[in-house]
Image 1 (cartoon, rainbow, N blue to C red):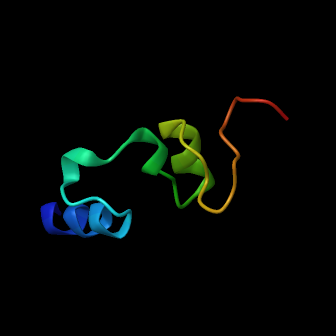
Image 2: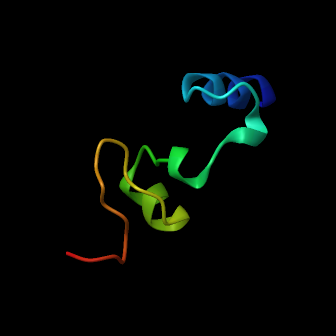
Length: 51
């Protein structure tokens, strides 16, 4: 899992996992977006915020 997280950080343009910012995080399902309160991938939608 650590290697996968490091790969994701690099895909976001960061050298190290610790450089990830909250803005780098998105969810892949509506359920996970709602639980984590992060945007659904490919959208600006965050559960409980706005229309």
